[in-house]
Image 1 (cartoon, rainbow, N blue to C red):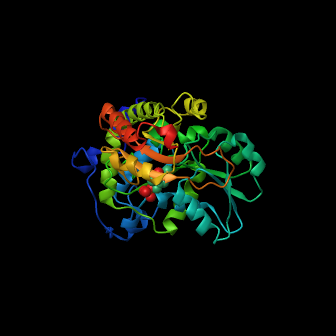
Image 2 (cartoon, protein in one colour; image 1 turned 90 degrees about the vertical axis):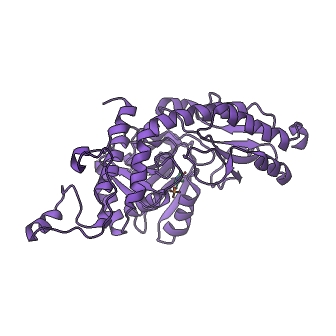
Image 3 (cartoon, rainbow, N blue to C red; image 1 turned 90 degrees about the horizontal axis):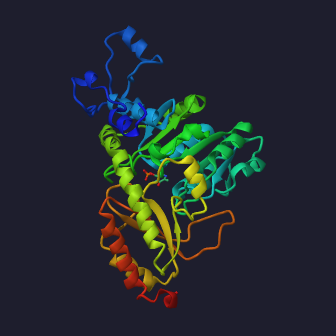
Length: 393
Ligand SMILES: *Cc1c(COP(=O)(O)O)cnc(C)c1O
């Protein structure tokens, strides 16, 4: 099956195994009984489709893991109770004291905090690299470099990384490549075709798709699978069957929702770039974005998440802007049907970066009509800047 839409409808579903029910039911449970000593022994063997304890998953878990492994194009998938837990436990599965980790500078903020606060405390040396480094990352490789952790486009500033070049250099040095693939979802970036060893999703975002559950996944190729799995099991990672059911439900409509988020995100970003109060739009699907060529080469589509910079940090102007948006809620997370904005200001960075061109605001284009979204944002910008933005700045 080559058509993505068709794959998403059927992945991980086996109605014949569940009385014909079209959706895998919610299986709740901790104890799983064995019929006999022999079946207990057999249940511990590799290849048992189910587990012998709820923490290792139920048929609901298997259904979602199989769907995700297929859709990401990996060997196996594990679930975690949040996207952040998937990022941190994937890292913990690979590193030991004395190892060196290279992490992209535009990594999701809480993953950065984990690396700085926890990995450092455990004796792991964390070094941040510019998302634009490409093949130049070879110069940062050390004998003890165990993991290169990437996110592309990265959080808040949306630079696109040259993942094939980064992966080639990492593999040359014997390191594993972990990618936070949440922005593109498995639909628009094929991690394993670009050299990634472990692809992580905050399924909380587009996969669940309705802002009503937290969930993470980590999917590995054959090379990384046993290491990832052992690490996650040692830490007791698992996820609620109710949340997994919601994620399975979300998967079925992901392609059709994402097409709309993509279209609206680009149209909104384009229109905001024309407002005089907006100094910069950070969206790799826009033709004049510095990451556009790499995005076009490696990605199959875009999500609805991007950032803008406005040309003032004046809290009165910002207050008027945020308070006059009617369709964009002020709030964290994204990937649901509703439009959102987050006031950021200046993201935390370690490497040299382009000059700041104003106060950064992250925008998520939801599924409202695009004309309404454009009208709402422009009206709020007009009010905020009193239509004389250059003077206010
Ligand atoms: C939201 C997010 C996460 C964390 O997901 P949670 O489910 O909120 O823990 C990780 N990475 C990226 C890129 C995200 O946007």
